[in-house]
View (cartoon, helix red, strand yellow):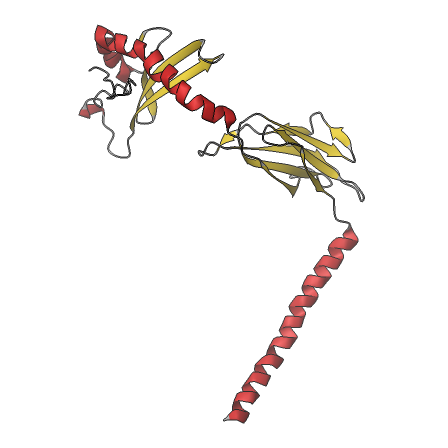
Length: 253
């Protein structure tokens, strides 16, 4: 098999061999996938091109431009690697993809990626800590931002919170060129405390600062009293409205 050039563009199309022999086919729900990846270091000074082949959701064989040949990762990929490594034209074409595929597309997409800016959306969610009675977990949810580099800090009454009580999740790719992450703070809030999640990002002219204050027992009591009163009011008012409407219909008849 040989990689071929897309007409008029000089971009190598991915080399795609046939799937493994039917004897290796699982009964249902299998996956056969080719994944081409370009890794760039310091722009285009160093480029690594990889082609990975998956069967049944497992990577079986991989081409690495740094090595210049295929490497079998499973027994299923061993025969493929041995056969493809004997094809000099194929290896030469894949080596040329470092320039024809990776470097070429870097020039097309890098300006878009470099200039793209999407502001993060920041919210705070309080949760009761599962291990302690008095502590709570404050979660600063930061989502929908690009580029991926971002700084998140927690403050309590103007003082930055650091140490083991503060930690963050890994970046999650949303699949639409945006990212999300969370920064957690374990704390024991008291009346009058003010917590602030500060987010700094390349898309922002100034930091986003979202505040959270713990509710006092009296405030929570008033809130529940209002909710209960509203519900009871509906219970007593609804029958009266129903009877009024019913009597009005009888009078009209």
